[in-house]
Length: 426
Figure 1 (spheres, rainbow, N blue to C red):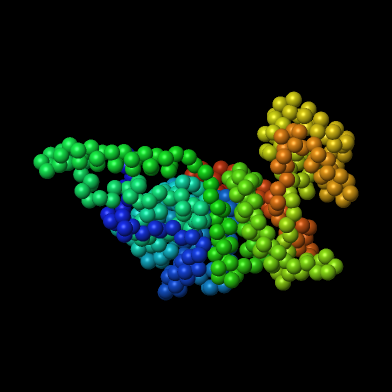
Figure 2 (figure 1 turned 60 degrees about the vertical axis):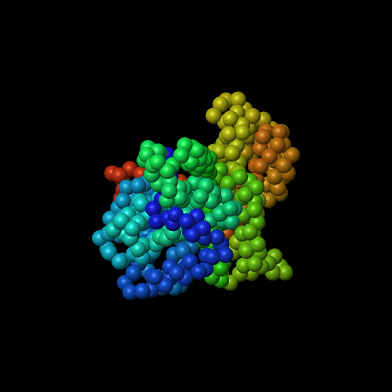
């Protein structure tokens, strides 16, 4: 049926867009800050149990620390968690004036979920949503107040106009039977209204017809840090991890990932300069470099055989779950001039010249096996007293920590421990 939303003006010229693009991030953060510093007030952070959401939340937490803003962190894996957060807000009246949501809340009517509309007990609370899930719920997009969606410019341009999807005319509020009883309504007018309703319903079906992902929440949060002139290597690294996680989990295509990665690469160059002797120069405790990464899982910690055998990218292109697929992998090794013993050698123990030779052979033969995109531009993190780590490895590690059942009600305490363990690891 036709979607109707609360708190929406019936005048299409007065309906306000409640989505925030990057050029407005600073003003919105200052609004959260002002509300949080009024008396005994805490900001509620609702965070989904995924790597991108954790990275985005950690970026905001670091900025909150600078501004002395109190916050409560609430893991949200399902609607039961939302109900618990809602009840907590009710029990602590006026404690929360702002709720920031990461990869949750965008695809449902968030004010209705939290009973924060005009008829709800949590009225007056403002929700700020960073959610990469698409399509976003249009009730959130075109509300008059109460919820703000942080989106990229491309997403904002894809939203249908409110008059395309909502009934914005007071004369159309009655159903067909009631309108037919009005003697002044003729059949032609009724037919026109039915046609308009069908057009709105069709536009809604078109908008909601497919699900996909948009810009990672961590990338948008780092844009906020940039606008506040607080960009730093630790925050940049969190954005790199969130973006890489999106790509490794097929939430972004290669073109979109490349565009966003290029934006982060420019920040890497700005915050990490190179001295004449090749040393990285940075005022941060960590340094970041841009390097191509193989789509071979945890290669730096495994052998080439193990990394390729456990890679989803390789598995889906060679069919490694079948004997024929495993034979194709060994055939690729043979074409590259690698023995099985060499492939079982730990990658980190290989000499640099040997690794370079493997890279050259992959460039020559991988395309014959449908693996043209066997590598992608990514990021490495360096520290003086620790071995370098890649954004891809961190993504695999955090996903591993979060791979348990995060939705089982009986396992809630275990879920919370796993959530905070993953956040600490990140």
